[in-house]
Length: 463
Image 1 (cartoon, rainbow, N blue to C red):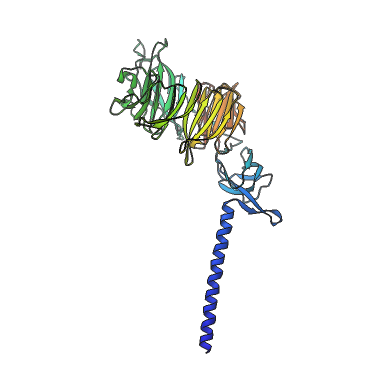
Image 2: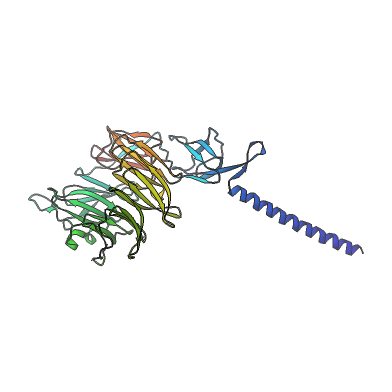
């Protein structure tokens, strides 16, 4: 009898434990679901719906203060739950300047801030390289590690900036361009062309150059292979055709898009072949993977490459620009018509944003990872921040501007180097006696490079 009672009691304990475990799991799942949805236990044990801030910095390990509160354990490259509404965020690190921004947290959503950069207050400066001849044009690779110096001779210079000691590599371009003269006394020949534009491939080994003649009577397009110049190709000469525009469409510049008299074509560089007409009367276009968008006859068309079927996204006025942007897992068609900015989700062609700016942009750039749309005319800038779907307008200190990295701009005014986040915030003056003729860049999150008195200068910006 005692054995039966003990067995029943043991069974009851097991059943009770299992019930408690099931209830605990259910409660835990419910709590986690509420937390994921943004609910949190606030002051006074009141349940509130909150959001989350995810913040990174360069260098890492900066102290994070939210609304003046800076716990000793709070560092960047982390996440923090915050109540919905506006918050003041400040990043500090010993020996560096500070970064701050007012952010607006939306309940149940994640706000990502991945671009803050802090600079050493005391920076060592040294001359990194002195060219034998001052360049007439300078361009920097997408990874910011290579710099191509172009001057009026056919011996150009390639620098690897990601080294303690910079050793130049000479690139002979005499056989690549038409605009070359073998004038008497020219040791390497003369390059008589003018660089109109330079765009690198994502493999950082090819540069698509648009070159005009000295008298502006003609121009040519060349894909320069900086690693193996003999494999370069003069597109204009190869196809005996004048192109209005040429763009790189893959990572290694093996495939190009070209506009010829308004007709869009595709060029296969390795096979030396040019396609039939993909679209006619094209005034502006963009592509992403196999997706194509273009502006023609006051309409915006969307489709896929090598597929004649297209859909009309919208009707617009002249002077419109179109882009495809992928932000996280969503693709968007970006339409900019004069002062109107529109986002159309590519999956269902549903408009998701419409806004206006106070000027018609001359330059438009899609930010790294599709995180923003940058629009500029002179010193006027408007930025559509995709994280919060709002437009902010601001002004550069000078029209002599460029990009330090994928999210930070600079301007040079009266020799002073001024930097900003892409939205114009966190304006800081870094250096003086900086040339506005040539680009400024950051390499390896450690060095700042710029030209000063025709010499390349390097400053250490992070330990």
